[in-house]
Length: 117
Length: 108
Image (cartoon, rainbow over all chains, first blue to last red; front, side):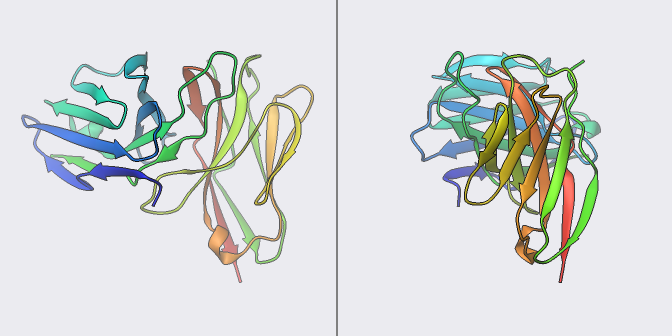
């Protein structure tokens, strides 16, 4: 157990569905992340929230919409996805980014395995 | 384009030392190097982090030469439970780039 939980663990959705992924951290951290992990591709950073403000958005399609209502919870809202969006979606948390400091150690959840049909 | 390159796979035997090298030719001045370990059905787990020279903790060592164009994760005396995928991460605030991972298989 890393202190970061994700629900659901598995999700199958059609291309016209709307669903949400949930992440919760119990570590008192102030930064949270969404990553996409596909077969044969490196981990791709999608979104970063630090102190509940979005600080990174790596050209992610608008069909992925993050929400961070507080420092303990992070959501990824999904709509009109494509089959190539099928992947493992990982959430992580850490202490907040500090300018000039090394990237903080990230604690990852187990991921949500998403299949788009 | 910033890239992080590492071998796809490596094999080893129990008790051996394993060295996994990551190439990051155009590393930025502010970038640090971090290594993560990932087991099946789990998220990655932090192993070690460094900027240059050598860093050692209770599970691994990290060697980064003066030009910082590469880094080497060293796992002393591996066991079967070290079979996992190892990721090299380069980056600084707001810019994090993972390699594709090295699948380490430790055999008895």
